Image (cartoon, rainbow, N blue to C red; front, side, top):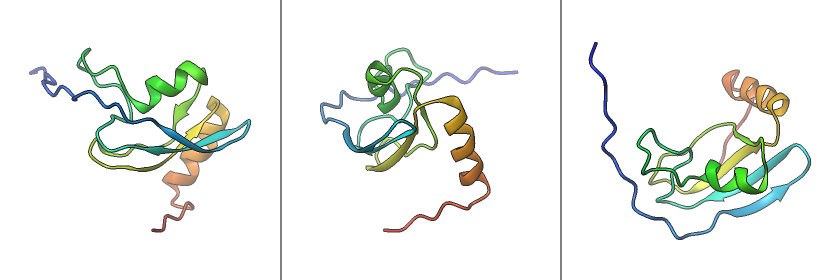
Length: 99
């Protein structure tokens, strides 16, 4: 079995994450283009939406992701129970998305 090595190194992203909505259960943030949703497997790709948010909101988890080059809204669960409920809604396609 061969090991896949991630050689992609994301350039620094100086744009801020805008928090559009926040309550005790979730966050809705605007992810800038050029920022990873989650830190990469390459240790040089530590900076990400999740990495930045967990500094302020320990225990938060991403319900879904957006590609590196894509900007847009991300739903962030503030705890595991909310994450499980939201992930179920996404997987059952009861969540609708619109432009």
